[in-house]
Image 1 (cartoon, one colour):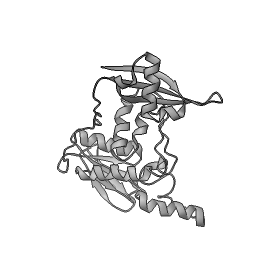
Image 2: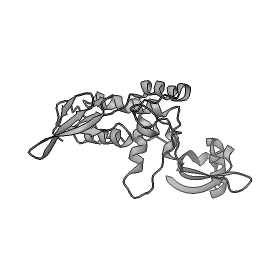
Image 3: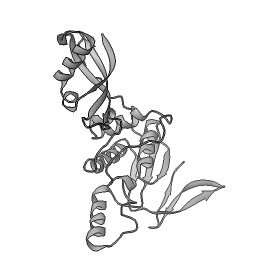
Image 4: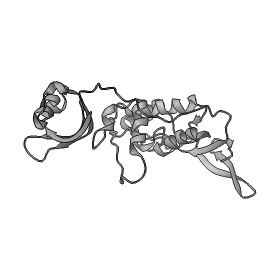
Length: 242
């Protein structure tokens, strides 16, 4: 049997499975041996008082074996020969749009004016050391967008705009810690975010999508009043069905 509870505990209890079992068993009047596992569903910090507390929503397994549920991920298939869709910008919107297109059986062609995360790091260092700014590769432009080299906090202005857990699961599957799936204020971390962004790019390419760097879009091409592709500053003409 499984039951959900809302509890408030000290930080040292929140991070210890055995202490959690003892606390919950005492609270509901059970033998702690009846509790086989405690899964944390949601976690937040209450720091309003001197003694900090952790608010937890937990799922308690009573006399039942615990099996960790696999992360639900979309089923991707190879889209190398599918209809192409041009996505301008490899920021969060562009990268997740590309993953969604693959999920729907379309081939994303992501066009990014800046550089990939590894090369971009050198340009950021040049800003600090030499005060030189590459207008196409800086804190704003480049793989991952403006947030890649921020502190990695995840915010949404609304809880009514779709399945946030699906996004969190995609991030976890690409290298983020599982903690972002339970924390009230998820935090990936600056040190981890660039690698996660790189992993997402590799997934896009693995399933037949394209991610092109150093391609600043300057114009669109038209035929019979229909957009047929884009033109880059470098002189490339890239065509696609969408």
